[in-house]
Length: 188
Image 1 (tube, helix red, strand yellow):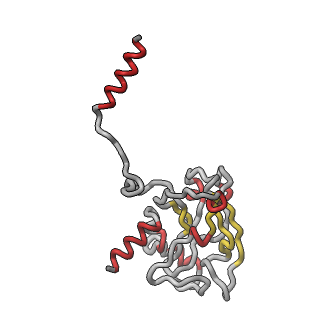
Image 2 (cartoon, helix red, strand yellow):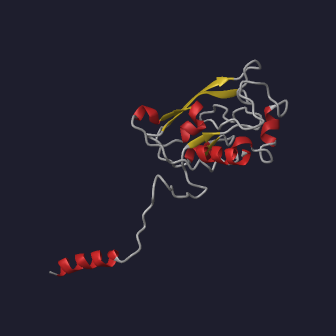
Image 3 (cartoon, helix red, strand yellow):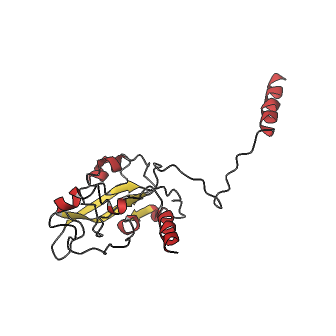
């Protein structure tokens, strides 16, 4: 009989507590800036990709969720300031555990994580995000690669100017939809 009374005691105790209901998706809750969500491949301020196709993120991934295939840059077709660029870049979110080890392994700060967490899909094949889906959007002043280097004559100029001119890595703590909404709100 005491178990019965304890059960009702728990029920009655919770009946008078305030309700904590999240009205999702109408009012999504605000996440902390350091939340680990969807990955973003960042760009330099002129639009060149920061990813140099070194594959260190793929090596660091404990879930084997990242696939990178590097290729050589040429003067006619330059996608990044280095010798190489990521020809193919894929992240399988069916396997990703959002640990952030890939972020720590990236030597160029190319890969960061946004606050975007709505990654559910009806088909598992849609959970494999390609380079085009992961690349940060072009913002004002950026040019779609391939194009020659605009910030200096060597890749060293790009990395020395990084701390004062971060390119598209600034604001990566926000989701892509949030960044676009902020950009459109500023233009209105």
